[in-house]
Image (cartoon, rainbow, N blue to C red):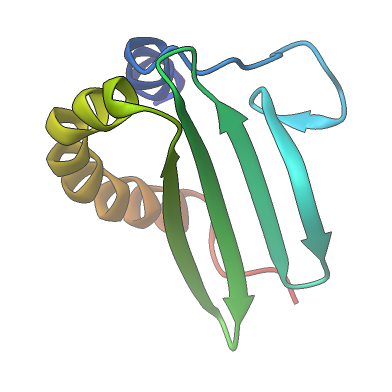
Length: 104
């Protein structure tokens, strides 16, 4: 699973610091709370990705926000977006089966 994620993030040239203990798989923690986590990473292609995870009533919600700094970032995201929309639900279902419920 990590290999799949790393390949996708590598294509997007996300600037991840994988060995930093204050990060999650290299993503900067932009905000966190008892039921939520917001991760952020910039890309050398000119986009900023924000991932938001929220857990309520044993339900995990996930959202992706992409901000484009230039036209190149938009052009790179265009073919990646359908792959992202297909793979994220699969990854979340896989993680739920593997790890169980949202933490209480």
